[in-house]
Image 1 (cartoon, rainbow, N blue to C red):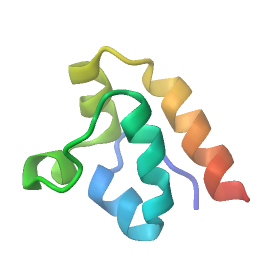
Image 2 (image 1 turned 180 degrees about the vertical axis):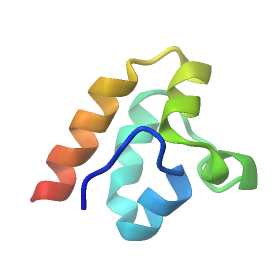
Image 3 (image 1 turned 90 degrees about the vertical axis):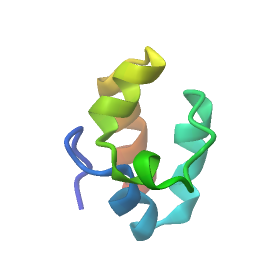
Image 4 (image 1 turned 90 degrees about the horizontal axis):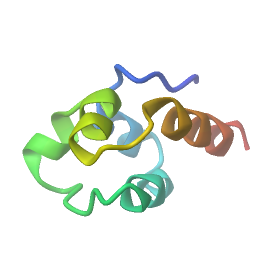
Length: 65
């Protein structure tokens, strides 16, 4: 499955919780809270001032393995 920036973080984590490390890297440490799990990857990157395309690329590389 290809990860896109409009996907909800919760959906990505439900596919594989190991992906959490990439969200931790951008400073998103509250992955268990309802609002964080409902945010899109793009929204989370905007809040944390992170390059969304770079995060999506890392996630897609992770899921390709």
